[in-house]
Image (cartoon, rainbow, N blue to C red; front, side, top):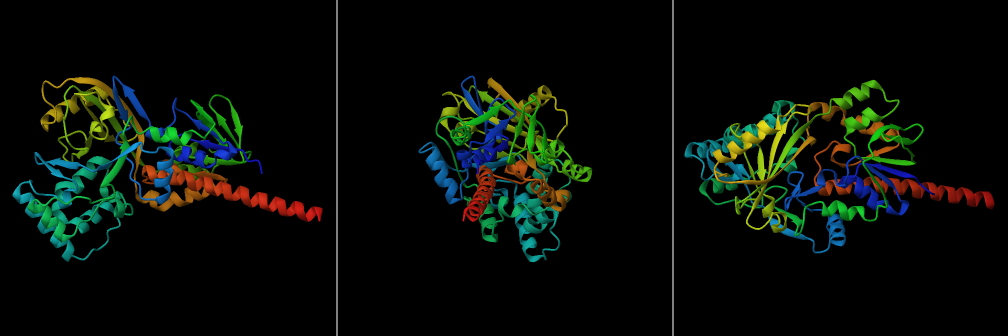
Length: 446
């Protein structure tokens, strides 16, 4: 069977689908000038920046083998150095297991609250707010978990479900909480205690490697609409591309806007899927060693940013010698207008207030990206309607892949595997059709 395959989106998931379907020479459309999606890198004034922090955490044997084969010896392994800045003090991540150094009354409140949470009945923890209180107790909730997440998600935490927290937020034992209060640092907790990053250059070496066998990549080609009945994609350039199989990594609400002959009720449900946006400010500084951490969380409202990371600690190659580089994350609601200059001035003041910036520090370069769809929000609407929305798209013979195509909290590894899974479903269909045609032909000639 000769199959015409179209892939929409040149991020990790789309490129992975293309890589695993390379023998069928799929056509991949990417609206930006370059492939990579949010896994792109940008070089400016000698500094290399990514779209916020993009680090590789590998658990799956296949992705370990794949990346090792695509980019042998390209990555360095790092043991995570992450911290929290609160109460004018820096403590190791995760907060819930490393409270030593905070004011004594705060430590006491955190430890006592955790013990009380262990003794209390769990109750209903279907929403994130209640899950935090039941899991960590009132002290840890008050001094980190609730303020940080309210600041990050920009909404009432009671509207967010708790079905995503089991793997992403580590729960310590009582022994670990006590050890952390006494200054015995708890390391290796959470899903990302170790990570990999390229020894040379930015994270875009990974999408570039996945792209190599994909011959038909069309950049600066945005989709206008998809006609699933006639099976073609129309581009804003006027080009029409027919397909037998279609893989979409577009954000699900965007895909629904582009689907012809779709019920308005489903379109409305798709538009109600929520995400939080991130204003990503990258800067290069004229002083080395501005921090020894990989990233630092800021839960308090007095600081405009929720996280600050330091790429020069991922790789020496991404910043000139004698300098430091930073990425600064500020979340905001999608469609909310942001005044970049006002926010940037506030960022500098806040970095000075926490002691990270000095008055004589000089900014050598500045690079800003506003990521409209950054983190998917796990709210009750998503929980109730997501599967129906995906099922309808698939009923029209469109496969979705990636963080935004599946509207899920995907790591880089998850996105690669998601693209692979979409490709394997197509390959299975092709194999089944070919086998059926072979059997039918054999019957006709016998």
